[in-house]
Image 1 (cartoon, rainbow, N blue to C red):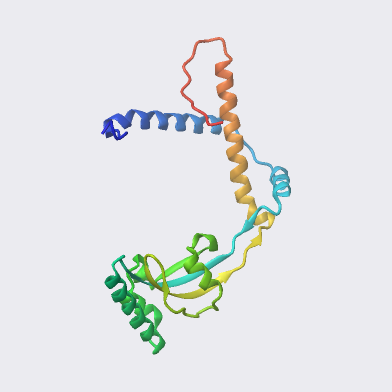
Image 2 (image 1 turned 180 degrees about the vertical axis):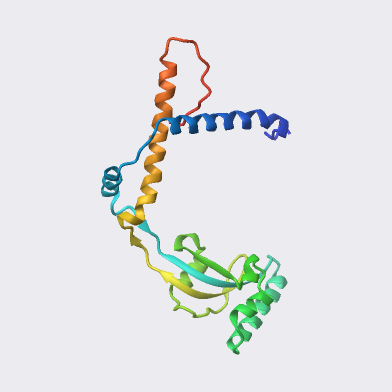
Amino acid sequence: REAMGLQSREDLMPEIERMLRIDERSDLIVKQSGIKIEEKELRDLFAKNEGNLNRPSTLHIRQLFVRAGPNENERKTAKARAEHALARVNSGQRFVGVIKEVSDSPGAENGGDMGPWPVEQFPPFLAEPALKMKPEEISGIIESEFGFHIIQLVATEQGADLTFEEAKPILERSLRSRKGDAAVIAYCETLINGEADILVYLELDK
């Protein structure tokens, strides 16, 4: 285990306990510092970052997925399954019902609903065709290294700049985090610059 750089649970526990003590002490320092976030601070921060605060474009799709291994025969069999599934859909069967029966994806029980996600978080082989589709439209068979996919576009949402009210919670978390870090650093500097000999347990990232 040592040669592989692994540690036992017993070896890790003291380090975990030390880290928890550090976090606990840091939280206490931040709490006692009485950090306040003023509305003007948030508006100033918003003004400085205006144009960089935006809601990304999203895609919401359903997917029917047929897994295929690298073996040529396996891929032929998987493609045939996908083609049969698409034929069922084109004949009028509900896409969600066919997904529940056929799809190999973990979300099959939910009708293959992948939910809305930022476009860049989808693999290109799904995002590119989806961006060309209309809501409720169903694709043809899409092949990837993983297997075969049939998707339905549920909805798209274009990205937009955030208003101050939309950005406010994000700005407040960021400002509170910065002020908290500054409070912990100030506390440590007070201890370090004091006259008494001390042992410092707090570790700070620059």
